[in-house]
Length: 142
Ligand code: ADP
Ligand code: MG
Image 1 (cartoon, protein in one colour):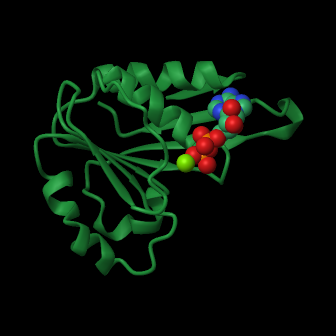
Image 2 (tube, protein in one colour):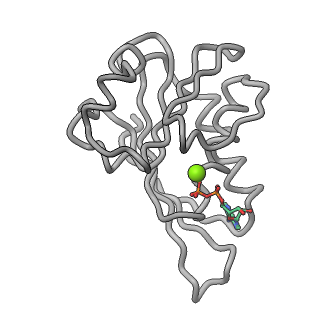
Image 3 (cartoon, protein in one colour):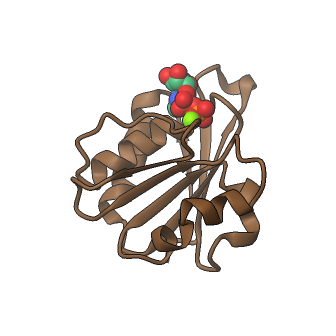
């Protein structure tokens, strides 16, 4: 599924729709360069799960958990991860294989530990189409 957005609000709205439809024990891998809109998408996603927020990038903590939504929400940002073993220390398995929903910003960096049925969301700019244009490709949703 490919969605084109021209404003942050549209990216947020797509995230919210996917958050509304998210099922327990699912893992979302979010890829795209710095500043492309991963956190904007995630904020909409959290909204769709009923999380009140505020939701910001857990860049320095790697994970933030929200328990006030429809199910537990685990927001990872693995941009600054040094070694995959840090994920073990965080206890990622309890998140990925528990009853909540996990979303991993920069998930491509920890590809080897992502479950087979991961849902991937790729956000890309295309400057010829304007500074705020984004192409968002979602794969793995049945
Ligand atoms: P990331 O988490 O990928 O580093 P952020 O979500 O923190 O990026 O920031 C994205 C920035 O891009 C925000 O300042 C947002 O307002 C801006 N932006 C402009 N156009 C869009 C768009 N179509 N979708 C998402 N964000 C956009
Ligand atoms: Mg971010």
